[in-house]
Image (cartoon, rainbow, N blue to C red; front, side, top):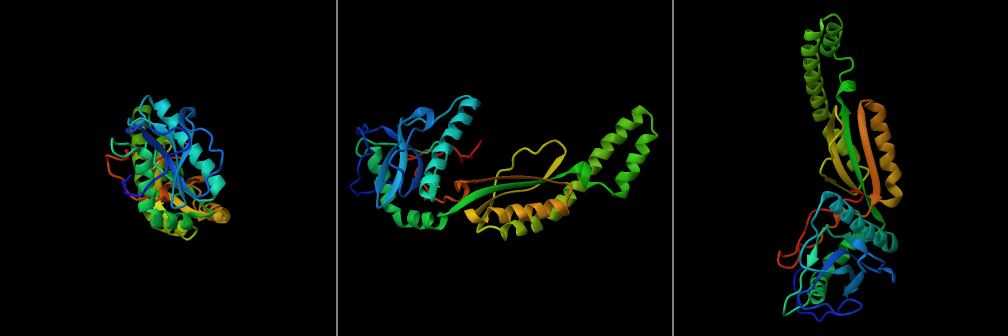
Length: 285
């Protein structure tokens, strides 16, 4: 995080060494008195400046890395901490997984982090106001390619021909059928995308594209978005998705959340020598 000149308190408990780092989970206001534990049971502490609190644990300068199973567990533990803070405070700015504030010989990590909070206090405080009482929903919509082609004359003709052909020819026709189904579904997905995105945007205050999960075999992705919605507006999104499903029986919809607004945190950037960002933490990843 950006260093500053403001005097800054050390976290609770013993002081950190001059080059010891802090692993940062989130910035919030009104963190609970009992913070609990974080990744691998690490005790959580707070660094506070200008009414803002960064929840952290003491950590070396090296980012978490290891086998995939360990990384998945660490990401979930990171997300669990953020979720607890969100539930307690009602507004939180989640950090990505593996954000570490390093100390230097001249300025320990708590001072650097507190100075960053002070420098960006107005922006951070304003964003917390915008996110209060709101959560993130993630929606993925795909189209089943076998169902999408129902009623297409070319596909119906190929299916009819398959019934009367010998096995060798049938294998070739099956490949052709799958290719044509994919082409039909790709065209439908391109046609549906702008309308579906517009409809979902009307249910949310903000919308952003997300990384798409691997769809099941035979499903062509249409869109993958994160929605920022008031917590009392979640049902509105569900009702719109139900209408989409009724209109498009071939649609395959994944709808998860609400959870803390990872996709909408918009925290100020950090220099490489002060924080290391290992990638966006996804709740439940």
